[in-house]
Length: 103
Length: 197
Image 1: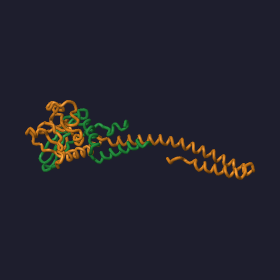
Image 2: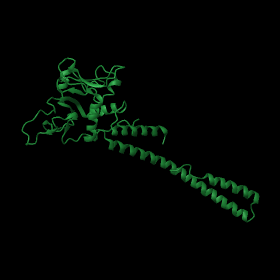
Image 3: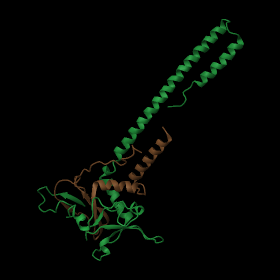
Image 4: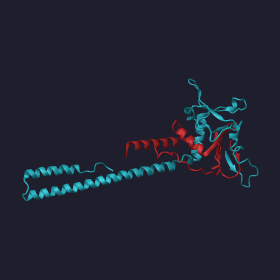
């Protein structure tokens, strides 16, 4: 295997590892930004008590049928950041490294 | 916290389809935003925007304004923040939110609930397939080289045997046989697979 291919493979593995571990850096953040833009139209921010509520708004093609409302089951004194989840949504799979084959 | 599908007859009240009561288009109308938005964040350097996971995608649910990104000025000890633009106009009380805290929460959520977003399985499988294909190619080359080496080995052994027979029946002098034998030994020693698979 040529050294260039080995290097590329190791770079790709490293990127995957960092993403899986949740490490955001100058390389992985833009990559994830792109993925998120494919899935979410926007993220809405609000504050409720000591909590920060993030509501990801799915793009229409990923948005499930039906009418939606927020179910807030948190304790009144809950704090921190909470990300709203959609029940029963299966998001379209998006490849992590779409350009790897071409590189 | 979850968004519940209200088509179930158990639920008698509902909000509009968009989770927080706004339509997908409302954000664009409010601020004149076109298309998917400014990917680097308005008035922000690409380097700064690249640090914020949700750069250009966050809107305030309290006042409807865009939530911008703000990095500390050089020399300051502040941290990167998401900051609602409505605060500047005095119409919003959404506090500035630490970038690392918000980005980590969103990333953790996606990883825990929707790992498909970063489709690791498919990515790893594709890498594995690519690696296997490369290995097959490599194995093909090695197999060809091995076949050549084995053919060379058979040829040298045949020659060595023939030289020994001729020496034994007196057709070869001891000096010549000795020289040929040494040469065939060298060739046999060299006729080994050039590398391991």
